[in-house]
Image 1 (tube, rainbow, N blue to C red):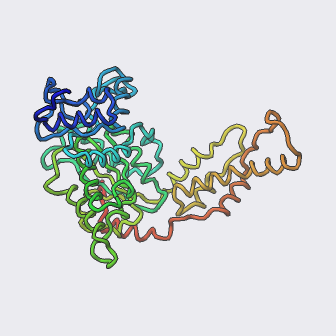
Image 2 (cartoon, helix red, strand yellow; image 1 turned 180 degrees about the horizontal axis):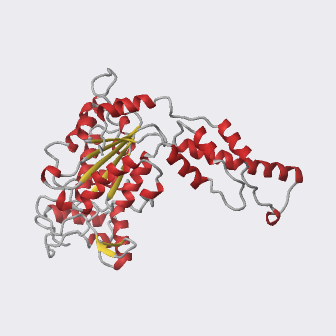
Length: 400
């Protein structure tokens, strides 16, 4: 019988336990044991394991990240970005606890890997909002030497306005143009049913953002996360602790010099806590589209080709005062449905026919435009005065 070992270290016992209960040999080779050459796991953010950072269990996201890296060039930490290969940071920073690494893995699913492919030019109108976003986000990344000291870039930006005006489109344009690590965060990403996990998720989120800096954290519908504190008796203690942790991470002792932007969007800016408004230094109104922007939208969605009848753009622009961008898209969709309805009625009367014999859809007529305007109503024009009042009190402007 083999003699039992006299004393095992923690790493030796853990390696024996994991190999005994199903750890793959390929994963085991990535870990650093005390009798090895001292090289740690290249995917957990540390090249050498010291006595404080303990190796945690490998997770599925690490294996996927390693597979992507090996397919790109065979070297761990090198991935192809479509323009050429460049070294990437490890997916996660070195966490001491496996539980925290599990939370970080769940947040990694909210990192936008590919480009949303939304250019500034594809957003019609909103020139003031685009100018402020470029000044606050794009320019500090392009010219970092100018944004130091007092001119350090803004860390918090709020996009507010009626629903359907393009706030999320602006966030997609930021993700496309800025080439930063983009975290698309909603309430479901940082709210947990387990006590204390919500605050940990917020802390881990900002640690990940600082690790992948420069990065942008996009908080959509932020009013559902951090509304006014202490006013409602029904406010739960867990909700208050989540709000407090978010405020601390945005502007507290944990704040670092890493370039991390917090981009938030809301339709109800007056419900935000005043402490969050103070941290969101740039508050940009995304208003309803003006006449020039509405005409550009109609010309793009309803192009006037040679086979089309003349589309009354002036009638469309004059009749859609107070319509949002999504309302204008609904008008165009309703107008395009009119000739399809006529064709479908004709095909139903004619009977079944083969797909090769189907006739093309007819052109959009001026009466189709008028019918679409009668059948579509604006959805966000009633609270315009409240947004204008909030913009006068708290909004950011560019004086020219």
